Image: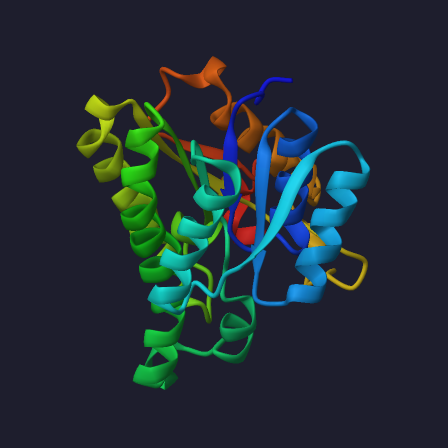
Length: 250
C-alpha cells in the first residue's frame, strides 16, 4: 500500500501504459481517475480496478480541449476529495501516425495539432489546473511521460519530438516553481514499449536489450508517485532498456 491516501489522475489511461499505471497505482492503495475520450473503455477499466479491490472512477478527458482538461481535474477532486498525483501520459498517437513525414512536408495544422495535444494540453493545461489542488493537498507529484524521441533524432516525428523535448524542459521549471509547496515534478523517458498484441511496430528486434512492457514504465511511475522518492524532482528517469546508447540501430 505504497500509495495509500493518494489520489491520482492518469491521463490517457483507457489502454496501454496509462491503463497499466492506473491499475498499479490502485493496487498500491491510490484512488484513481481513469481518463480518456472513450467512455466505454474508461468505464470498463475503472470497473475492473474496482473488481480487483481498488477505488477508481472514469472521468472523460480530451487533452486537446482546455475546458475538458479543467473539467477532468475538477471532477476528480469532486469525486475523491482532493488530488495528490498527476500523471501526464496522454499522447497523440493517431496524429503522429498520420503525420510521419519530413519536417518540410508537414502542414502547419498537423504540427499545431500534435504540439497542442502532447505539450499544451497534456502538460501546460493539466498542470495549470492541477497545481492549486496539489497545493491544497499539502503537495504532491507530477509525472510527465516523455519519449526517447526527445533525446535523439528519429525521422518523421519532428513535431512529436519537439513537444516531448518541451515537456522535458518545462518539467525542470515546474520543479523549481512549486518546490516551496511540496510539489515534485519528474519525467520518465520511455523507450519502445509494446502495449498490446497488435502493437508490434517496425524493427522491434533492433532494440538494445529488449522491447519494453507497460509495467516497466508503471514501476518507475509508482516510485515517483510514492513518498520514498520525495527528494527527487526536476529529473529525467530514462526507461528504455539502453536504447539511447544504440539509437542508430532503432
